[in-house]
Image (tube, rainbow, N blue to C red):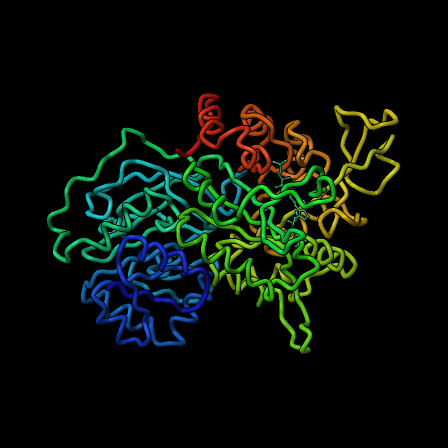
Length: 531
Ligand code: 1PR
C-alpha cells in the first residue's frame, strides 16, 4: 500500500497510474496524521513552489512532512517536492520551504539556455542508492525552470547531479528520504524501473545498497525531443478519430480522414519511443471541452499506459455554459490536468489575449496564460501557433516583422511575414508570429508549439526560416512542427535551427517513417537523442 500526497495542484494521476501499473495499491493522504504514519509516502511536486507550500501549510501538511522526515520514514519526493525540502525558492520570494536542506532554489539563467528545461537529460549518481540500483544510465524526463544548487553544506544529501548550462542537484537522499528533480512517472520504462525500487524496497535496505552503475561520462546532455502529434475530432458518424489535414484541410472526398483511434495510436507511439505525445482537439474552438467527455476519457485511458508527457490542446478558454454557469480557462485546464495531461496548449485564445495586451499595453492579470501559469507553472502552458506566410515586395509594405526568404512568393516577392490565425487557420488576424510568441512568453507561457499552415501535411520539410525566426525571438523552448516527410528533415531542423523538439503527425500515422528510424538517423548525425 503506497500513500500519495495529492494536494490538488496538478497532474497526480500519472503518479497514481504508474504506481498501479507496477502492481501496488494507492491510498490518498486524508490528514496530517496519514503523512506521519504511512508506510511509504510519495510526495509529487506539481505547480509552482509558492502554490505547493501554500497548500501544504493550509492543510497542516508541512509540519507532518517535517515530522516524517525526522522519523526517517520512507518518502519519495518528485520535482517541486525536491525543491520544497530547501529553505526557499527564487520562484516565490518570501515563501519559506520546509528548510530540511540548507539553501535557496535558483532559476536557470545561463545565456542562450532555453528556460524551462523541458526534456530528457541524464543523471550522474554521486553515491550508491537502492533506488538507482537498476538505473542503467538512460535519460530521464525533466521539466523545470528552477534548480537546487550544489553546495558543500548539502554534501550528505547529494545523490545525483545533472548538467543544464551548469551542474545542478537532480536527486537527493538521506536515509529513507529521497527526492528527484526528474519525473520517474514520465520517464518511460527507465523511470518506472526506478519507481519500482522505491515501491518494493525494504525499509532497512539503505544500509545494503548495491553499487549504483556509474557512467564514464563527466557531464550530461539534454536530448532533442521527437514528438508524435494526434489531431483529434469527431467524424461525421460521431466517432472520435485521429485525423490529419493537408494544410489544415482534414476532409478527403467530403469525409473526415480517419487514421485511427486516439488511445491506440498514443500507446503505439509510446511503445515506439516517442518522447512526448500531443493531442490537439482540433474542433475544440467551437465546442465546450468540458462537455466533450470522450476527449477527457481519451486522456484518462491514455495515461493508464503511456508514461511519457502528454499535452492536450483545443478549446482552452473561458466559457459560459447553456445554464449560465461561467467557466474560466483555468477551470478547463484544471479538468485536463486532473484527467492526465501534463501540459495544456492554447491556440486561438492566445491570439486574442495578445491582441488585448497590445491594445492595452500591459498585462491584465486574468488572461488564460497568466492564470494557468501561476497555478501550474510556466512549463505546463504551451502556445500552439498556426501561422501562414504573407509575401511582401519590401519590408516597408507592412508594419510586421519581416524576413528575406530563400523561397520567393508567387509574384517574385523576396520578403514575407507570418500571420497568426485562429480557429484552426480559418481566420487570419493582424498580428505576426514574433509578436505573438514574445507576448505569450511575457505572460508566462513556457513553450511554443510552432505549426506552419503552408507546410502542414506536405512532407516537404519544416519551415526552417520560420523556426529560426521564432526561436531567436524567445527564451522558452520551441517545438518545430509541420512538414516532416523524411528522417533527414529532423536532422535538418536540429542543425539549421536551435529548435528544442520536432513534432510530426502524418508520416507516423501512415507508417511512412517510424519514430525509431528518425531517432537513429538523428543520433547518427551527432545530435543528442534519447532511446
Ligand atoms: O484554437 O485553442 O481551440 O486550439 C486548436 C488546436 O487545434 C490548435 O493547436 C491548432 O493548431 C489545432 N488545429 C485546428 N485545426 C487544425 C486542422 O488541422 N484543421 N491542427 C488543427 C493543427 C497541426 C499540427 C500537425 C502538424 C504536423 N495540426 O499539429 O500535427 O502540422 O503535421 P505533419 O507532420 O503531418 O505535417 P484552440
